Image (tube, rainbow, N blue to C red; front, side, top):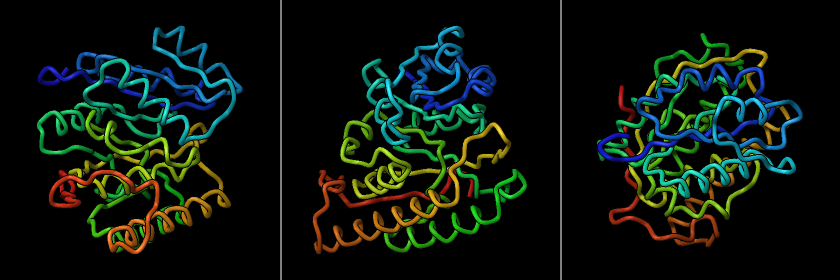
Length: 261
């Protein structure tokens, strides 16, 4: 716990048998109260391993997609009394060692969301991020910042932490079940006016780490741009989109620069 706030780590997983144990081993359970693995109908022994390691495990009967996995993650965390929820991929692409920093930033009351950015600190390429992914990440982020009036270093990280209020406010059920869920959720967070901070996160790319292929990356990028345009049209009152039908916090969207900028 942090200041009496219950910290829960959720791990969306798909065919993560080879990396799950190492990921769980590095979670700081002196601070983290609970960890939940959500297995999206893996073809390997991910779920069996998670249960053997004593972790709460939820299994989708069929593969429902990355976005649907996250929906289950957050619903389960809230049902188990989470005040702070950290999403950590089970493929060990992101280091669990940053959980305390991200959780404390939320526990301090200064931020509502904290992102682990692979771009801050210039470590993405050194960590093995393919050049085309780095270039597209930077270009997409610039366009999203322009359209949404924010100053984030990266919109596409899968390492994220949220307060309970955020997860209870944004209409996650309206979002895609695929990878564009991430872009929609972060856009909703900015639209609602929550405060977003960032910490530097080392990038890790290796054979066991999951990654979408080039065609799916293109579809994801287009989905991000569509979401950003919808955000801007909604702000201007020129369109109504279900993903942005929510109450906004007083003062409109307020994003904060990264914690170590």
